[in-house]
Each structure stands twice: as C-alpha cells, then as structure tokens.
Length: 354
Length: 246
Ligand code: FES
Image 1 (tube, chains in turn brown, yellow):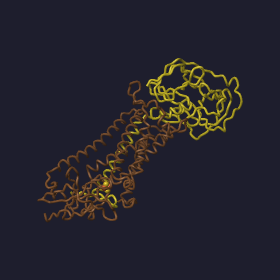
Image 2: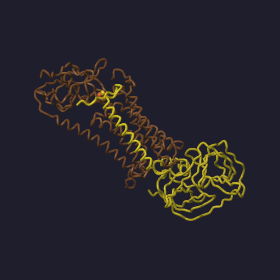
Image 3: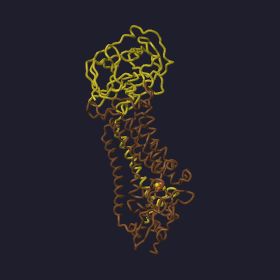
Image 4: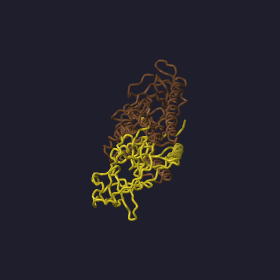
C-alpha cells in the first residue's frame, strides 16, 4: 500500500498478466501485418506499423473501457482489473509509436515544422460548415489524435500510486476519467480520418459496435447497482436502518447495503458483524465486495487491507475508513446512519448473543 | 457465496478463478485474431509503385526545368525517356540542380517508378556535374498534343503517388500531399478507368510554366480542363482551368 511507493514485487501473476498482454499484442500485430501483406505485398513497412499500432491500440482501449463494468457485473473479471494500469501504459506506448511515425512520415522533411504542420496542414477545413454545407469529410482529424495522445500520456505518467497519494484519490480518480474524453477523441480521429479514406462498411460498423459494447456494459453495471441500492432501502429507527439478514452474509464475506443515502459495507468475521464505508481509500473500490483475509477486510480491486474493528489499515500503513455501529434484531442487521469517530474502536455486534 | 476471491499480489489465482481467466484470455485471442484479420482484409489494396530507397543510380541527360522539372535521357538505341525530377523529402527540384535548363548533366539519385512513369529523387548534391551544353538534337523535344480533355479526380503529389508512399491518396495522406505540393513537387490528377485502373497525370500551367496550385487542395477532388500532351513517353495535362469539386 502507500506507506512507501515501492511497486508491489513483480510476482507471478503480474508477470503472467504482462506476458499475456505482450503475447496478445504480438498476435494482433502479426495477424494484421500478415493478412495485409497477403492482400497488398507492396504496402510499405511504415504503413503496416502505422495501421497495426492504431488497430492494436483501438482494441486495447475498448478492452480497458470494458474491464471496469465487467468486474462490477461479475467479480470473476477482477483478475483483469488488478493490473489495468499496465494496459493503460501499453496503450500510451502504442499511441506514441503511431503518432511519432505519422508525424514523421506525413509532416517531416518539408517546408513547415512537423509539429505545426500536424495542426495546420489544411487549416481552412477547420470550418465544419463550408458554404452552409456540413463538411465532415475534410475536417482535420489529426488534432483529435493529438489530444487523445496527451490524455493517454497524462494518465500513463500518473498511473503509479505515488501520484494517487500526492494528488489525492478523488482528484486522481476524476483525472483518470479523462479516458472517456480520450475515447471520444479517438472515435473522432478515426471517423474524420481513416473512415474518409477506406470505404469498406466493416470499419464504421465495428466502430459503432464497439461503442455499443462499451456503453452497454456501463449501463448494465449502473443498472445493477441502482437496483441493489433501491432494493436495500428500508425503515429507520433511532438512527439505525434495517439492512439484510445475517444469513445473507457468509463468514469472512462482505455485502454492500444502502444506508442513509449511501453504500455501506457489512462484513461477517467469526462471530461478529461489522459495518464500514464501502469506498476504498485507494481508488474508491467497493470494499463490501471484498473478503476478510488474515483478519483484515481486503478490497477486491487491489487488495488494500483495513481492520474491521476500527477501519484502520494494519501498521505501518495509515489509511482509515469510516466505521458504523451495528445492531442485530432477530435475524436482521441494523446499521447506524451516523459514522463513528474516525479510527475509533467499535467491536461490531455478536451474532451468538443476539 | 463461496466463490473464490482474487488477490493480485498473491502468487496464485484460486483454481476456479484461474480457469475462468484462462477462458477470457482464450476468447480475447480469438477476438484479436478475428478482428485484426477482418480489418486487414477489408483495406483497399495498395497500388503498385516502387521507391529504391537507399539505392543510387547514375543518370545522364538534358535538364528541362519548365513546365515540369525533367531529365531527358536518350539511350544508346535512341529511345527517349523523360524522368520527372524531385528533391529529397517533400521538396521539388533542389537548388543545386536549378538554372541548368538545356545543359547536359550527370548525377546520382534514387529511382521512383510506377508503371511507365519514372521519377528521380536527386539526393546526392556532390554527384551533380554539368557536362556541357546540350546539342541541337538533344534539345529537340517532340511534343504531341493528343486531345483536349476535362479530367476529374483527386489532386495528388506525384512523388508520393509514383511510389514513395503506398498508399499515397485519400484523407489520411492529405497533410503529406499538402506538404509535398507546398514544397514544389509537381501536382498530378488521379484518374481511373472503368476497370479500376488508375494513373496520375502530371499537371502543368500554360505557356510552358509550372502550374500554381493551392496546396490545401491536395487529396480533394478537382476538375482540370486542358490539353493532354505526350512527350518522351510522359503524359501531362496543360491546364487551362482548374476547379475544386468537393
Ligand atoms: S481500490 Fe485499489 S485496493 Fe481498493
């Protein structure tokens, strides 16, 4: 965790993750270049790398955008989420190769500074409406790619936990939502660029299908959470709200419930029920979907730990999450709306004595 | 309720979860192969053309700068070839070769070739030698005015189109074509026949002058009206009127 900014050791799973990533990338690039050469043996190496890097990057971007909602819909996708930042850094490198080669190939060795030419080569076509006619075919596509590259760079450069800690999780998280803006820029870059050159209907069809997959998964994940929240609304009594029954939580497991307008994580550990904030101090992961591992609440996203009785990370770490008083009435778990003082001890409710 | 729990910093994924992850990886591999193959297969096939990058040959002949920079070369059997001349990168005839119209010269350069169209990139200034004035015979240019035509097609830069870039047309190549035209590379109009065959006809101005064209018209569809002229195997259009279509 964040006591020092040392990367977690390069364990077997990380190596496997990166190995598979590189393997899939090579598979995609190899297939693209092989089939392109079969069709056009005369294509230049620059064109093959330019197009190969952009197509691999586009596929990777879709995967990155799908992992979040997939993991929210089905926890078995969590192994893809854990090292997602490696995908982000790889995406930036692919975009960089694409941009550097395109800038050199199309803009360098001429009568204008290549970095200026990228934005000004056909400057008059920045007018979207030419003579009152919508003119998307000629609108420059290069600036959209440049903006996407800039966003990918900022995200890749700040992907380490050092930046998360120094910028603060809410700001860092908001900044990394920039990936959606970058996605929009990439769509515009492709639509105003290659789709104006290549005429096969397969390209726009796949781009639109990709957009529907990404947005469909996000809507499905949002719907699932909305329904969970709605189903867990219930009556309030002396500052406590009834949530679920004890039987709904297995020992060592958690559950997300909705109390006083926010999500709370309930955990059953040995004979007791504990309630904590559902928002992980790392990247806001859903703590209630985690488990108790070695006596600590463990976040499902990257495994940060918190002690159930006070919400504190075990020493030497210093993160703290809020805790809540609980009550067991009959079989029902009631949770206080008000939080306990941060870091104060709260022993939860005994199941056997209820 | 007892589904396995994944912790990334541990060495092993629980077995049932590992099997699911393996399934996802397999599915991803299938998607990657399928999509990249499909995307590659649907590309417009690249047209022929060749640029002998890094290879230098020696050329001898008479330089003519206007309306197109050309080297008129006569082989031992008397066949005349007109090589279009351009500079390195995105530039037209380089300064070291200019001002030599009508002179017999020799230089090294790299050949660019597409079908019957030939072009030389003058990229070795040190090799450029003026051998003397051309003879009357060498200067005689037989020009044949074939017909008056109206051609509609994409405005291209001849250097990329003749083989330096493959592909060298369309929106993705537009900025490059703008730079090339702006750098003095002769413009061409890309025309296609009904069988899909294509050729770029170099454009010149009237009165034996180069054609002045707005570089930002590159990769746009233009209509050119003028005289089609053939000399030394090189077809060109002497433009009387040029307009931007779309
Ligand atoms: S969000 Fe990363 S460990 Fe919780």
